[in-house]
Image (tube, rainbow over all chains, first blue to last red; front, side, top):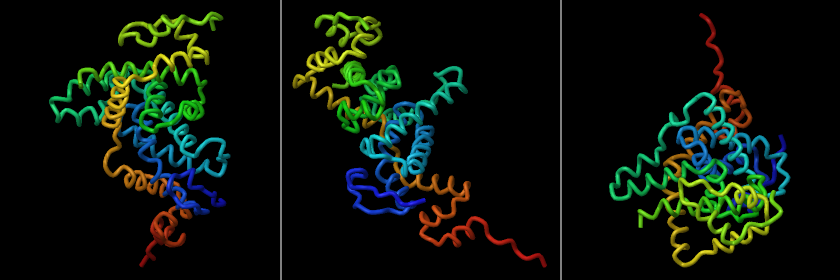
Length: 183
Length: 116
């Protein structure tokens, strides 16, 4: 397979180079693992499953890289694959687990238990996050953590712009409301 | 989609639907497709100084509950190597391991010991 040029805009701070396949994969892992994991965890709500999704996404992105046409940023393209992979993983998981409440607790939820003062507020926040639909969770993560513009989110998730805005505003209100006890 | 746009009051009520309460379904359907109402909601959502603090708290809380675990990148690299091993993708494995393709093949499939 021919090496694909990866520009600095596409991978952040990586120097321009015609990278070989192994280096392309390393760059993808280095640049996008954390962002993919956050998007994945916001959807699948299980750290182990989120790591599976991260691995699957990176392999899919690396294999599909020769077909990447540059119509969006590489970051948006990779996060779109992450979102779709997480959604299909969750659907398969839900097929297996008849009761969604049997999904494992999130590791992050357990970690905050060490801080008694924040525990209740973070549990409330986590519950509010869980109560959002999958799409709203992705939108709020892309906006608040990836700092994507509304247009970028619409392109990443293939949604109309009004849907992105309205879901984001509602989701942010709900999450802010849940954090009121934290102040 | 309804032809008439919801009033500003209805939009604000929809935006501020308390958690657990059912949002106005008519408004919900309309705003999902209407650029004009999305813009109006954006204006309604325009942050006051207090809300700006709330947004930053949402970001902090999200960072905490969605934090990647320590060693994620290395673990993912190792898992990908294992997946490629299973696939016998010697060319890519060689690149990842920094060895020749033949060495990667030998590491994965060592030659059989001659029978004595």
